[in-house]
Amino acid sequence: MKESTIMKIHYGTALASVGLVAVHILMRLTTGFADSLSYENVLANYQSVPYVIMLELILILLAVHGFNGLRVILLELKQGRVYEKAVSYGSMVGMIVLIGYGSRTIIMTNMGMT
Amino acid sequence: MAQVSSIADEQASTPLSSPKSIVLRISKFNPKLDESSKFMEFTVPYQKWTTVLEAILDVKKHFDHSVAVRYSCRQATCGSCGMMINGKPKLACFTKISELDSDVVTVEPMNNFPVIRDLTVGFEKLFEKHQKIQPYLIRDDSELESDEREFLQSPQEVEQYIQFANCIKCGLCNSACPTMATDSSFVGPQALAQAYRYVADSRDKGKDTRLNIIDESHGIWRCHFAGSCSQVCPKGVDPAMGIQFLRGYLLGFRS
Image (cartoon, rainbow over the protein chains, first blue to last red):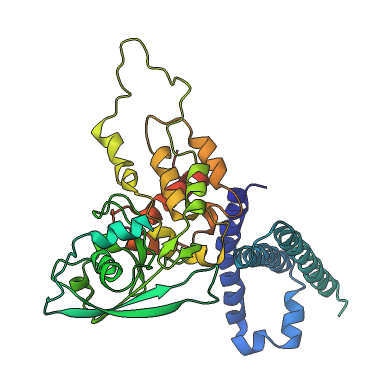
């Protein structure tokens, strides 16, 4: 993939994350910040399908943005063909694993498997 | 050796009886012999107009012929005498001692370049990256049409790139760049500014080729827009701005 395409995704995920995380934080304020983080309330949030979709989107956006950011930092830190390949593929694997594990948590909680 | 003696025979720019003097600290390092660099200190007289290069050449003439320094035009045109002067990349021929406002002037080789000896650094990578972006007009119709004598441009079209054509390849921008300090593969502000110089030229048709060259993992996207390249340029070129314009092309904001 071209670096400009990757960076477009990088900037896009950053902007979208800011919007969705803002909504996510504002949702905390609907029932009072401390109450909204109580165990029962958090579980209740996962029963709302639109909210679950938003959480899943935040997870994907932040994972893509974060791991690409990490890739960029590591590429600037050290250079070399093998190292750069390892960093690129490692970041991709890390991203997939994180999205997979996070999605599993979201889906299981939504299904009531706590 | 012949070159050293000819320099030593030159007239000293500043009489040794000059009332004002500074301590000139010169970094001495020969990578083939030394493990690390060391500083040698010389008390050098100066006048209001004395440049750092003249002070170094006075040291060569009167104290230490072995100081390695590259210079040529002495008028900020050849781009040979770039070095760190009191911690900032500057042209030695274009920096007056009086404007440094310091009793001690420290000169070191430029950062982000391999040291050949003392104040002289290798420019191979700089030129290699400069050549990589194809710094020439690319056109299919390289031959002029029958009646044409030149590729005409309006003043507005010239205005788009003319400041970038002032680059003298001195390497100060690359020396100041924080990305180049860690990423040796980064194409660098000098080459990127030159890429923009040709992309913005209405006579050039190689925009896509150049954008492809700089659109790689150690290309234009590794610039963090620190802006130090533009700050140190002795010719008023603004590489940071050129880089942002190039990003505009790649992101689809410019065509």
